[in-house]
Amino acid sequence: MLFDVGAAYEDIRYTFDEWPEHKRKGPVAGMNPTGNIPIIEMPGGKILTQSYAIIRHWGRQLGAYVGKTEDEKYWADAICDIVVDFQYAGRTEGTS
Image 1 (cartoon, rainbow, N blue to C red):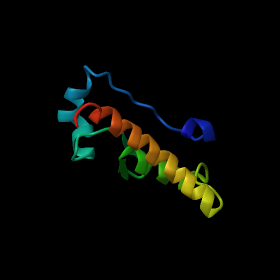
Image 2 (image 1 turned 180 degrees about the vertical axis):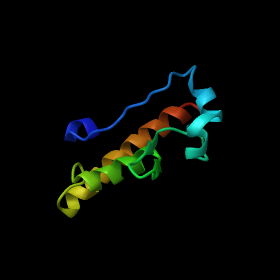
Image 3 (image 1 turned 135 degrees about the vertical axis):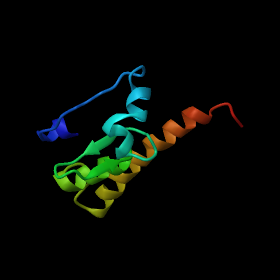
Image 4 (image 1 turned 180 degrees about the horizontal axis):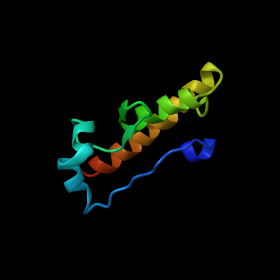
């Protein structure tokens, strides 16, 4: 999203092997009490967490991907929620 709108950002990624150490120690440990990523540090030090909350926040801040009409805003939210539904379904498939 940031790349698409031409915003400046620093992309820091961890491998699956690196993540447990970063989760327990260093600045990441103090940024999100749930220990989950993504963790976004904004200019001024404000911390954002939770993927879809970040997407919606940036969409509003950047004036992109949020829709101009109420119907467009609905569909922008619905698309995020559909992705959540798919992710949840994949985790619970075959458990009922």
